Length: 117
Image (cartoon, rainbow, N blue to C red; front, side, top):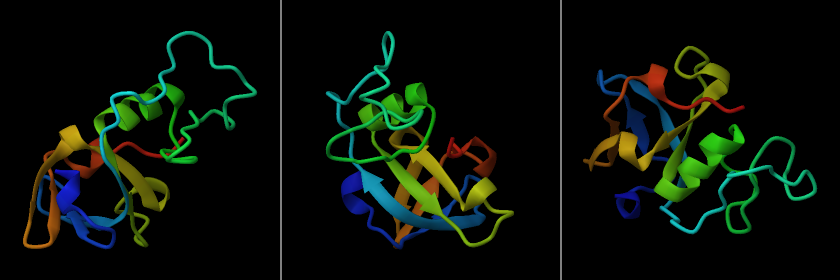
């Protein structure tokens, strides 16, 4: 599904409310880094899981970042603080319902969008 998503597309939640726009699209990477066991502090960027092709994204807890990298995700950005805490959120491909008419539709309400760490 990520192949039909581009940056700048509006994102609406399961209630049909616009919550922001796509700031980043990352397809699934089944070989992405995992956080099984301890993360070497010299390999980590703060509390984030590094990924050579993705950089610092997603900026979430290591276990959540590993899952998002493996499943694929979009980063959602907004200028309305009430739409997403901190103005940023992440939705896994599993949370996407559809992409139609130039709009990304989530299968979940905004409250289930993953916030940054």
